Amino acid sequence: SGILKLFDKQQALTILKFIGLFGVPAISASVLITSDVTAMDFDLSLAYLVVEIFVYLSGALVARLIFRARAAESLIVGIACSFSNHVLFIFPISQFLFDDVQLQPIKTIIATDVIMLTLSITALDIVTSARRTLRTVVIKQVKNPALIGLIIGFTLLSLPSGVPISLERTSLFVAQAAAPTALFVSGILLSQKSDARNLKIASVITFHKLALHPIAAVLFIIWGCGYTFDVAQTTMLVTIAPVGLMALTFAPRYNVESGGIVHSMLWTMILSICLIPVLVVLT
Image 1 (tube, helix red, strand yellow):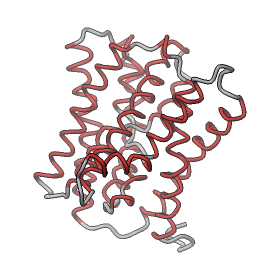
Image 2 (cartoon, helix red, strand yellow; image 1 turned 120 degrees about the horizontal axis):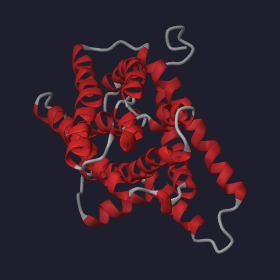
Image 3 (cartoon, helix red, strand yellow; image 1 turned 90 degrees about the vertical axis):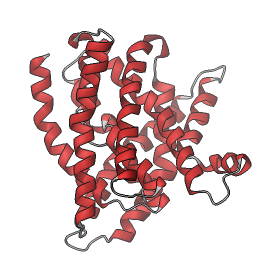
């Protein structure tokens, strides 16, 4: 569509704004109200979170120190380096390969990433705010899409009668529409010209996502925490997933160039398709 000029960059950014304002809250709420907290392995989830934060900070520091990126761009790069495409890519594939018990770690990671995204948006609001006062930051969080989703989710869970099936299905419907829509937008943006800096940033993101992320996970989760590959198999699959959609979704909101993110999404998608069968066979 981008090559044929059916959609231009400005239209793509408008679609991303819809995803950010409506899709992200729906994803946050849907994940929360459909998660079984009692089945979560919090120790494994915490171990993954430590690895994710390490990759996040590494990517952000590389962008800041080597590419002289602004604080907002550095955080967006960190999100791209560490957030996996588990909702649209890994989870659907895993449903054909694993039982419900083995799928639970992926669900837990998705739930954890909703919280990580909320904190990331808060950090982005802080670094882009002209007045970095506590009052300003708190007021800005009224418009934090991920936080809005969390509040809606917790509110629905607290209802004495349980979550109304109509609201559960509505949130799921909007959430499922957000991911393919974002991929469609990424195709439009890929048709745009990209400079050398964007390609270098894409290389950094790709290295962090498909090299540093799984290596750090093996060192910390498998060797450090003592989990076997059988137990941590689906968690390891998440580490070799393509770059997630959230970095692309929020880049325009904070005036961050999305060219490097879009290219890394394409590269990691191709490489991940090759790596996943290898990991499944090895474990």
